Length: 246
Length: 289
Image (cartoon, each protein chain N blue to C red):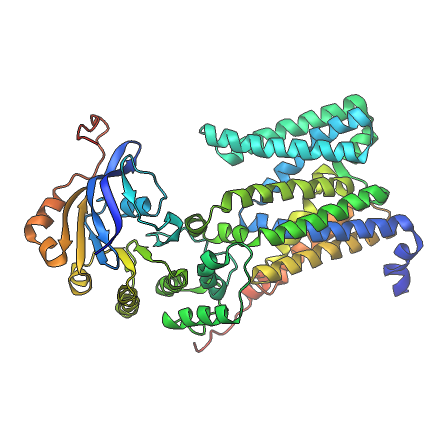
């Protein structure tokens, strides 16, 4: 069982204040892990660290052969300019960037791939539409199609199912399960614990400090949830420097 | 009659043909840049940069008189200094980029006007501020055409990161580091095209042929390729019609070109098929689905 990601005494945060504090552990290759915890618990911060958007305050992340830019990442709030005049098709095709780079042409087989991804998320017929005309759920479907094209070994989804209706949610979950069977490593921040129980074999419960990490059934205990809830959300401006050995 | 009005001035006078060629070249170079400035919500940056090139051109003028290359080189240097300087100050202090750019361009404008006035006459100053499209000579024409060609080629090269940085900068950062360099190259294109436009339209109006066709195009096309096509067409049409208006009614040609572009804009706001006011005001039945 190989490790795709290994966190070694990892502390991530902003302005020296930790948002993820002393996290140790590994994400197995091909595993499907839910990251749960209260708002402000460090889920998004951990993901930003994994994809290299922020640098660790202490400790390190080992990615075992995968470069940060090879990780497909769906942010919680994508800063997409929805008024920009670009079509759904072009937006999805951007997922081919890794293979195509700045100048690579998009040939007939690539067009089939793009069409296939658009069909897989149920957006066939939307190709020429400007992205500004999509609903929230359709937007999320489009972003999943782009993720598919990125064909990444590691996929990080930050609260992908927020404000998404049940049908869309089920469709997109199917895609996530499909990625799992393809042995891709998937990390997803999820708030719906029933969804976690039903679909995610592994769970990390994060409340700034890692509370529990392992098989979902062993993590989702009343005791652990209570511990997570006691976590204090606000930064303490008077906080002393952390003395835990780095 | 039609020939007399629309073709004859160009057939008859070489300076009119040069002016037309110059404005067409400007249309191909500057209008696509304007579309990107608009989509990046940087419409007024072009204005600021246009003022910023003035002191550089003025220093070139002081050293070498009305020498094309001295003024163009001075303008390019001043434009880059201001673009980079404003960016650096924005990053190292709490002042935002637009505020520091505003400070820079006001200083530049005052400095430029002072420099030109010290060395030259009021006629020179007018040339600097409003250009003289009817006095385009061969080297100037070559410079404008060269800048337009170069900027079209470069735009094609940085197209993907430029578009992606507008629409989804977070995604671009996650797949590539091309966003930052593409932005800098794009700013360089803005400065270059303003220096080209400066020769014909002056520092105050050069930005007009860049931005007015771009905002006009927004009312005619839904996708970016169409917008750029419309912008180029509208800029070229403004050049042609503006020169004719200036010829027939004996008006200054630079302002006439920009006024025509302005008229096209006003017309598009009213009747453009994409969100024109008339279409919004017309009662239209909603569709089945």
